[in-house]
Length: 109
Image (spheres, rainbow, N blue to C red):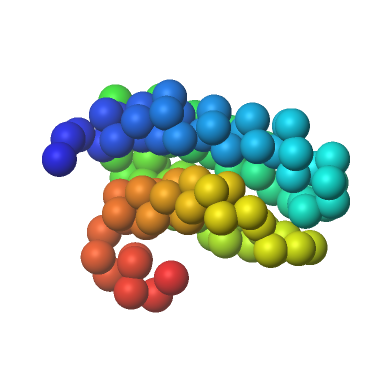
């Protein structure tokens, strides 16, 4: 698979920009997400960036930030069902983040 930093880079470089574009161009404007949900998303992205930086020096702190990011991301609740391709993108980000956590952390999530 790859190292922790490579996996986080994959999320930051390839997955987040697509969903961010969905938020900026459609989801927030059309009322799928509230301002609070957009704030949670932005905080999640910030945590993932911090986790990426920590992945080089402190894997335990990195994983703690990933865990916090997954919890925050899971707390986002849309007002309407997401269009299928946007839901898929969000679920891929969640799944990828969960895959980074140790197995015991995943079973309690």
